[in-house]
Length: 349
Image (cartoon, rainbow, N blue to C red):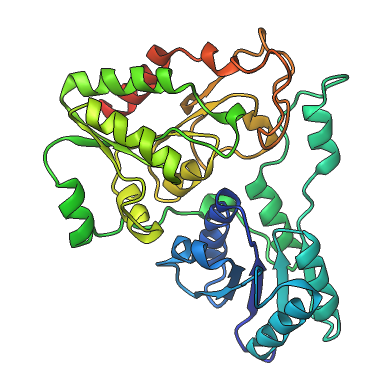
């Protein structure tokens, strides 16, 4: 695909959600390391732009799908903005209606266009209640890599190296203040209730960490209700600090890149932290790592799962949006002591 010795330029499409966008980073790291002449332009939403900071040979093009690039006319406008960038190929890691429309537009120029196979049928088999096929599916990272293989760029994912730790800005340092304590990030929220550890259990973990006086507990979240809950926890525990609502994404990433460990649900924060090589302990409720959304390169012992003997329908959905009757308390089967032991095992290693 190298045209007359020129560098190959590929458009990578992944518009949302934050966790899925963050999961492109290991692929990009492996790809640019293996093919140093390659140039990538990432098409994503403006809020996610900081996720790609510090990547070589990568630029970001913002898709404004709410206004400027809305609907068929808006997507045609987007295509007209992309066309002068002269792409040799398009890697669609999203495969939704918007990107399928763009595929038709790029076909006008005969630009090679490869799309992700999301494995919908096997995911349906994994999450259905009857005749469930409970097995490890291909990871999202592998599915992303397959798209580049179709374009003639096979990727060895062992080439994926973590992003460099980001130097802390004056604002972040002023807020968190460095001392001898190790930094523990805790992101207790998720998009759906079925993926959230009960707050009283999270509080038990925070209390135990706080009692040691050895750790700074940094609480991540967003939205007014979450800020309120996290501020309350920060007021209760001496070594806990609420960061929700105080930092933009770039500043949050600075901080995340300097953590000693992150405790997260099956959510975007897990992927943001793992991109910097931070050990991540993940808690799983009605979702399961078998669906393919496990944070890249994390050891499986860092995944603490709800009890499937008590709740055999797990995973009930890929995204955690389906909680069958009686499954509301599935996550209570993860003992806070177990969570604490895993965190301390990493912190004291």
